[in-house]
Image 1 (spheres, rainbow, N blue to C red):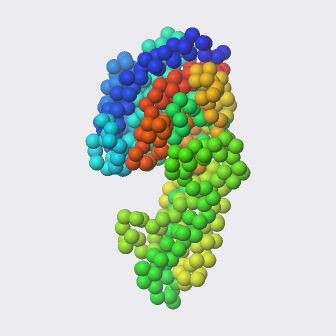
Image 2 (tube, rainbow, N blue to C red):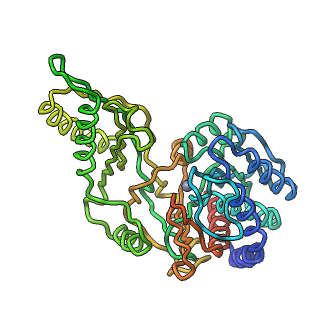
Length: 412
Ligand SMILES: [Zn+2]
């Protein structure tokens, strides 16, 4: 059974009517950004907004996390929508009335917008609760930027009592507002992080500046492996999305290499440097490590040094559940119009998401929410100091996710 047209039309109208409400939430949060683990004001603000809807709010879940359930019939299944709450250590350069009031902290990844969409969707679903074919859980997750929040919330039980049959997420993207991009496979890369250190061979006399010079040479060699560079301008981004629609093989099986000495305090490194590898599968990431080792062996032999590589962190890749995506797609098409849906056939390779942990537990899917408007100089390029969004994307996001949630409840 598919979502009925009358309900879809009401969702659309309610989402439009909620524009001022969610813009206010987004701007309040934008003005008041909090770093991962510090989201206490944000949590209190969102809990208060959910309280006002009459939902029972569960607080302090895995840190400053929250969730609220809309229960229409406990015998029916539940679907979940997860949004994130935290900001970044970036100094905002936008001169807008809602600019960050905290120097050096900024919502530069749109989690303010995601949270606003979370509250608005909860509000609309509550209003239409008589017509919702099941139950909904709205999850507000802290610490996404540190990729620690999702696991903490899962351990705190957010996917139990009951176990949701599916979970969904949205992330703003530098695509034109009004559009949603989807994939039924890999959505984002997995990531392995290493610490490498260079030391002198027993009989070699090398000073720390010498070791740092070797380390720098190693970093350059690793960086050189990259076939794809992170697009930096709006136009480069659009060209890259275009490429993801019919990707060459090298982009389907991408590996993104990163290696750098700390910029902040170079003297304190003494031949140590960080290595990051992003790729679609653990297999590809292991292959990349082999390639890195080969390069380091070559360089270090010539420089009479040894190298040591130690793993320091890892994040799994994020796969959308293909069947789930395909089954909610008709509702998405009906609600936004087919011309506003962008089918990506490869993952955006430069980012990771701890949403991956939820999708290991239950079927899940994430979608890109177009939030850019180049005419208004709102480019929505993630993690940049002039990051801003076209706020009409809040309406698109709320409409889309409401339809997706209801369609998921309709599935057998
Ligand atoms: Zn983000």
